[in-house]
Image (cartoon, rainbow, N blue to C red; front, side, top):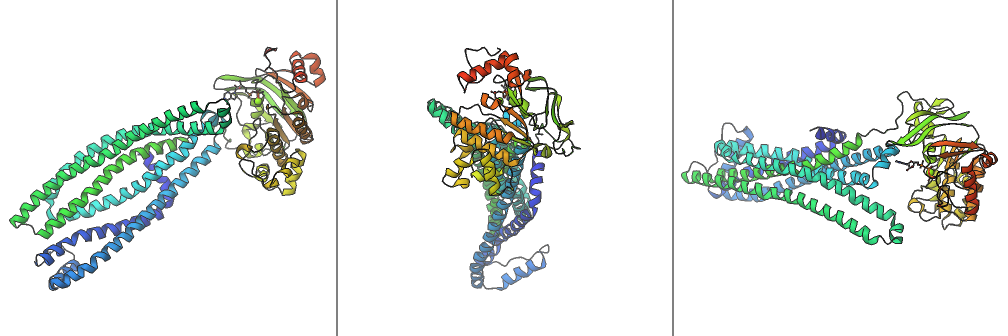
Length: 610
Ligand SMILES: Nc1ncnc2c1ncn2[C@@H]1O[C@H](COP(=O)(O)OP(=O)(O)OP(=O)(O)O)[C@@H](O)[C@H]1O
Ligand SMILES: [Mg+2]
């Protein structure tokens, strides 16, 4: 019930469109009633030439209409009906069209809003959520679950309003004509309800399974497509296909189960409907033969009864559809209810422009009970370039990620000019930090658009300036459309070095006082490395820089070098000092000289805990 109520919150803003649809439904239902009522004059007056009775409880206009029918010759009445019937159908069809149109419009709007809300939520959720949730499951929640809600909203909303209307109109007719017979026939309704509830319960269960499998399907597709090169290089195509086939097969089986249950409902309710109908036929015919009911009245009763079956069947089906909707809606709300772990303090202040120093104060951090940083204390004065070096997995990226508050320390504090990051707004904090991540992220858009991420209001000349600083201008100019060249998904049309320089240009364009440069560990040739080092040298000037370095050439840019191993600062000092005092650092330099692209702790000649 809660799910319905919350879904209704999404319908609320579109109640206008919904209202128009309902009005059309009321109109078309009344015309349906007129259509059934028309059997009485058509059969009794025209076919059997009997005078129609006026009744005291009829409204005046209806009795007037009856008297008018009685006064007309049969032939005129036939002509009249020949014209009136198509007109009636024309109006009814028009209203039905409008009702369907507005109803689907309302549901499309609801789904659009739901999708937007979910997307907004996903972009607001903190990194830890995204690291845990596979992208495929996220995709399938936004696309598949909202799709289910959309389908059932069109059907569901229409039926929810339309069918009770129909039931009311036809019920009024049958009860007026012969209430005793009507009530006897309704004995089949509890049976239909029982079957419906049973099938609904099954569907809810299967719908949940279908969603899980859909998430796995999405994941498998995303993984294989984004990693297609590795898939092909390692000849994993067959394995990937087999993996996909087995998930695909599971999805097929669950959906088949769902379809089977759904479609079982119709024949079962049909059969019960037929039992009711044959009872009405048997009983009614005997009354017509005994002369206690006219043929016209019986026909109208029978027709209304037949028309009553459909709405009941639709409502029964609606219940099944709803079970799937509720399951999907609950999954949607589950996401909407996730709170980001990184939230702004209600009284968060705007961080003033960075002036003095960044301080890590006894910072510890763990991912899911796995300690990564252990009591790190570090002060970085303004305009210092500090290099973090150390074995892979030591916690360098994690340490840097605490600065833009992608995560909060498990204990200890990170301060900027003495202000705890948890007490300032995210916008004012992140606005002062430029970030070049270890894996370069570019968007499938033009060079210009990718640069504009750094500063949306930058002019082209400013972009060119930034690209020149980052040694990216030359290669951008050589591309077919220059700054308007599309770089492909995640920058796949560029080389690794070009991607990095574009990412550096983007950070430069933002012109932040603090820069975090997480050097890519991918191998670069000497020329490319030189271009990047040169770019970094220019970029670092007059800024406070946290430089996570994997290459000796980059380390040399730093004023101070901090060696991090297993989540602790083990040494720090200048290049010369460390060469004298730190065996770990010396090893790093030697390795770099021997194999310029090697990383500390990755050589099998050297134990990791040197
Ligand atoms: N999202 C995550 N969830 C759980 N553990 C993580 C996550 N990210 C990193 N880790 C773990 O934290 C440790 C430190 O990772 P981090 O990325 O900070 O290392 P690093 O020093 O930057 O290494 P590299 O030089 O290879 O980039 C590693 O052991 C890693 O397995
Ligand atoms: Mg790293």
